[in-house]
Image (cartoon, rainbow, N blue to C red; front, side, top):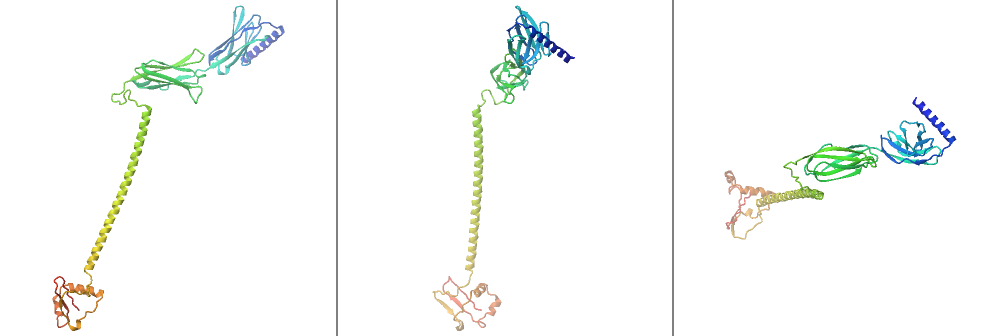
Length: 375
């Protein structure tokens, strides 16, 4: 039914246009429409002033006729486009109303007459009001401590002008607004302030070329800093001091690590030297022990039978034993051992003067006494 009505309206407009073309007209457009900026979802109105005697007025959006007006009634082809008529100073004013404006409606609007070379045109701009919010919500901050409040505007076309209304006592406040790098239809504003009491802060977004704005308000609760807090007002270190302190601590840590490594190396080297020194002492002790043993062996060694003393001595020798045979080193050792042992009674009976020859040396010097017994 609705489509049938539209078809009938179009046919009526064609019939009217054909009749006007046949009859002709000498009217003209006195003043065309003006540029309009509208919010998405709102209404946009355009006026066109025409001299008397007109037969048909046509409204076009971006080159397409969306509304026609006759002296008797308008020919509506789309419910979003309607018309109003006025008379002022003997002239006729036709007004086209665009309902529920959309972003796709942005473009050129033209008002024209059927038999006139003149037309009037304007431009429709559409703006979108997005969301405005403060992510933190209500805030609890320290008294006389700097803090930040962030406000975000998402999905705005074009971006609004962001500002702040401060309803708390502060010692300092400032703000800046920037566009979000990842979303060209979003912006963020950061308020920096040093509060001194409770109150509210309000973020305001104002649309360009429109007398409309949107705002969001949050409560700011100020509390006293703890008594044992070491971070007193005016004692906050600047950024360069913090960086310098961090670098100094890093260098000190590196120096401590290097000193520990050097100390460990020195201790290890000292332990090695002490171990080597103790080894040398042990070797020296062993060598001394060996020398003492060798000396003892030398002291208890073989008797030198070729020794002759220059001191006068008395010797009684049997003729057959006047010359002593040379003895080998192998036989001298047991002989020496025998000579050092005390003579037992049985040996004295066996070694009598009648049984075996005996050689005895009596040395005059009291320092040396040598006894040799030949078996």
